[in-house]
Image 1 (cartoon, helix red, strand yellow):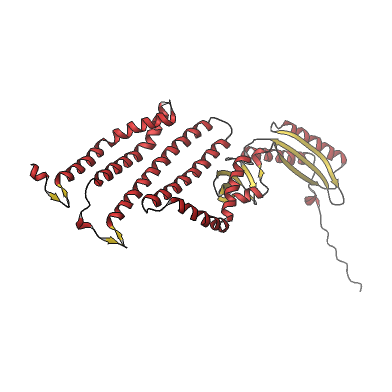
Image 2 (image 1 turned 60 degrees about the vertical axis):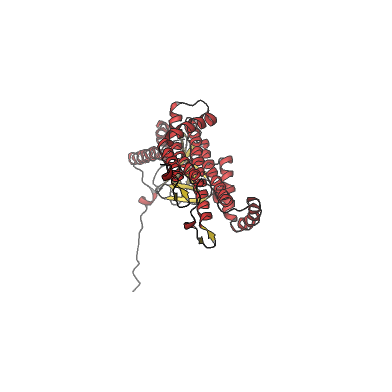
Length: 367
């Protein structure tokens, strides 16, 4: 039996190959148990005492990436104990195949490690979002989403630097020095993108609007659905989805409809000149009584704003409470307008355009 285990296969003994295969198989079988143990320890380090729902959420996010990371780590460590077979030695683009496989192993390890870090970041973001959902202020929630995306970008950049360091044997210090020079040139070339990034920070800390606000900007009216690193996504009242660069959101005049204390309605009735002063006064009093009966109207003004050779202009202005759903606002406007029309019909008053008659006469030519 010992002679069989000492037989050389691909520059390694058969016993060495069996030990490596056994280690990989053992890791494959117990990786979930080890992952649960390590995840529990990690949960204790970063989270302390947490509810059972939080622990379940953490395990759901972390167990899969940790399983893959442990399996790949054990596989690489086990294969590293073997001698690389001479029969497999060849070069690819002047690089030895052993170096290529070593670099590939480092790339896989770094990718799995960054993936695990991203899942931990998702856990923290999820817990913070759960806490912010209990508060009325939604600005904290959008700030969490923003920084989650921001730190994910940082993790990806760190992963790229680690790959350059371990897989391609590049010195990170000199690389960062070179990147600083290249970064300055790239910053000049991508000035607009950097301005949008800076504008996103201004939006989050100055808070002219938050996710869920109804705004008017650049000729569009819609609801803020997401504030990203480069642009703000808006669902317009036409149900289209537009992206506005953050710099324009900062530099433009943004009308935040949600923050209005009241919504104003203005109506100008051009009444025919046949209406008497008594009829106009009676109509104005009736409209005031009508507006006073509406519970959503907080303030109103009804007055004869102008008169002249074409019409008497009765100006009606009223302010409704906020916040108020747009459907309720439109329904109230319809109710008020129909009631005004009914009052005019009761008083037998007509609009100026309807009462206007055009007379065309033709004189006969003198014989």
